[in-house]
Image (tube, rainbow, N blue to C red; front, side):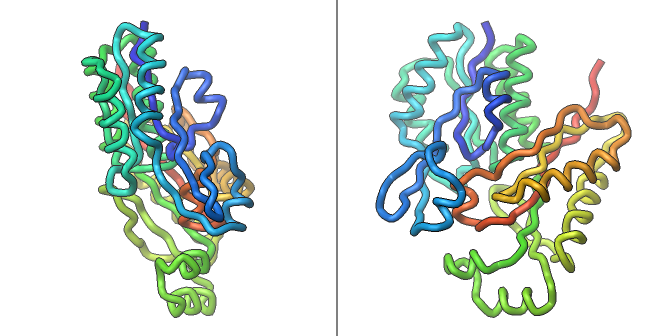
Length: 280
């Protein structure tokens, strides 16, 4: 039997990969116009149309998911959460693991979110499927956590202005100059990087950032992610594929998730990647 893998829905792992790797996904929560709703039960359009707050899963939800995963394995369970700097989800997972009362459960803070979190989860799942022990799966997750990068671009700051996260003067200046804000998620938080002049330039910059990270003899795992902008994410992936020369180990286009989109607004497009050395 293999080690069981549990994560939260902030990772936004596509349904086909959840099924293929037998992942257990605990949903994040939103409160829309005063009504609580699970992330998997609401569309992006509904989120953007309402008054929204977000929250992580409860310890009880993690406890249930852990116990269900333990029933399918004798080897233990690894729980991989969104960055603890962004959410109380990691603390809830630790509490849920304690409540589950099993010694063979480990909780790992991925230090990231969205597509980058998904890459950490899939690295752990791959190790588990290869027959790795509980501690070896934890080590694989931590190694992937150290390798992943996430960069993204927003078409405008308008949504962040409405949410009170940035001043309106910044959004007005950006619209006037045709500037596309860009950021990198590292060390558990978002950091602004030099903005681009237009979305086409932003997409090119994202691809260039990925390729500059290239390691000789390594292959890449990569996600083109988006917040209600699937066509641009697909275009971004096509640019990556044009640039790659047999270097792609795995790739998919995925959503940024409704909870994350509630914070960023629609139109975000980004790349998450890790370059992994090929071992014989």
